[in-house]
Image 1 (cartoon, rainbow, N blue to C red):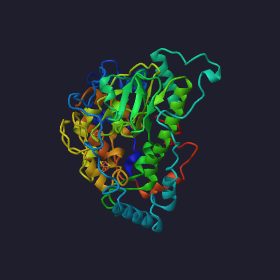
Image 2 (spheres, helix red, strand yellow):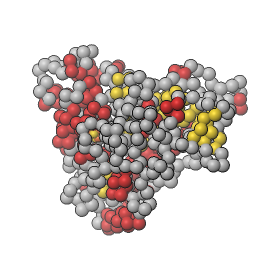
Image 3 (cartoon, rainbow, N blue to C red):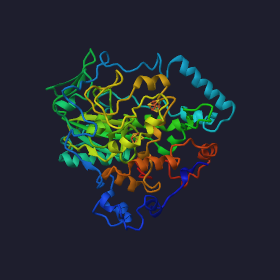
Image 4 (cartoon, rainbow, N blue to C red):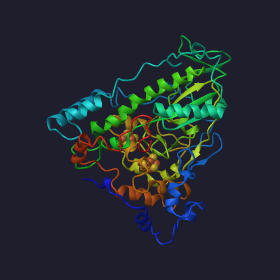
Length: 467
Ligand code: SF4
Ligand code: SF4
């Protein structure tokens, strides 16, 4: 049994930090607004959308800055990514190795890789509805008896979309007002014109109406506890640094959820009488970053102050429904990454940077020039088999932990306001065993979990733990 389930009270934690007895001795470091930790963590200001420690920056002022003089939109020829079928996870060599691992797991009844684990994971694939770029059809307002589209202020419309998105299964929503910079987040085959309705021409060029000035952005997350069951990072394990399919099911399930959420949310927007388009955009993380619902952390993924790297997708729809833009955030994620490095230290392919500071340099053809970040070597990850055969960087991020696991609201707040304890928090995360491979008993226990009170499942939109 790992120490994953260990709990530490707030008092014990502050004592460990050397702060007990000072009331909230760290208060001046954290915030002058709160007198003690309980007041801090129970405050209205800790509401997911208005947590006091999440700073809102000016529009486009993101914590992984872009130099628009250098940045260029994606071009598959000039800017190619690695070939996953030639040398990557879908290459014959890695597919055969994976199949052999699975066979041995079944024959040896290895918890996490048994036939039922493989079947659990296998059933998560292939469930996506076919969604055209201009979304599936929905009844028009007129067909329902309305005289025209739903009318609301940009702020009201954003809240309306948030409420619907939450019900469909997206816990965080933001919006971007499109300008010339934001247009460049899309691939090179997207053009903006004075037309009424978007269309794709025979050359595959996306023609987007200029009146579609807004981008609704939402998160699709994946189940954290389940994801930890994918970790296979015990050096004594014969298949060290691969994955257990039982836990990998969490990621694949999120890939199944993402199109369902998208299908429903875009049909909802169409039902209100507006367009909901998805022009080509190879990278999805920038939309979440500019909409202020994530930062981009060291692992290159979307890193949310609420869910860490447990974000499967920052999905979006370009629309003519007026939306109030949300500002980029600084929740201390990038600053925490500077001293944390847990993802990079646990990357078996050395694809992630161990440098303390972000850089403007690129390390791989798939990196965007003109972006200050920790660039990822996509080719090294791909050739190792990631992310099919490795989930380390996604799964071990300290920001992943649910907030009722020990004292994570305090850690989040402190990390956002001072860098003083960041190294300590990262080290504590390691010592607590959060990112250790789960035991056989834990893999087996999942199958017989008490379904009436198991807190870790997340039913879409049902407001369960951490949603
Ligand atoms: S998925 Fe790729 S980048 Fe992430 S830890 Fe594994 S090999 Fe490294
Ligand atoms: S594991 Fe640490 S360094 Fe990596 S993304 Fe998470 S906070 Fe940043």
